[in-house]
View 1 (cartoon, rainbow, N blue to C red):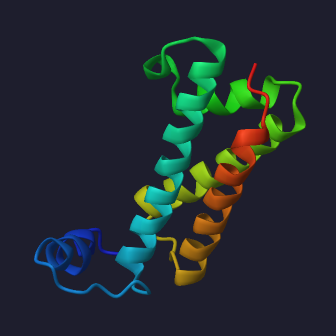
View 2: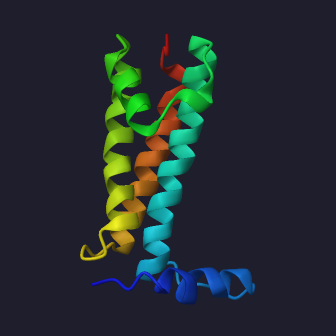
Length: 126
């Protein structure tokens, strides 16, 4: 089982002190998965809110995914599906200490986030 204190002792403390952190360690992998999700979530939320002329702050995580999946545009629905997958990975990384999060999981999350951000400019969000 992953000891959540390692987020601080093995990742945050060295990072704050300007020391190198091992990007292949589990605390780093868990953090990378979370940041990959949030960078995608916030970017997509802002784009959807601008396209639909609504307040981005009113769009929650699951609401954003539902809104995307209901759109007629295939790219928008694809982004919704990828965001849902990335969110599930983030939940595992943040809350499921019994599940091992590996360097490969972090790499997959980064690739999925890149796919989302690459597809976003061509998605019709209205």
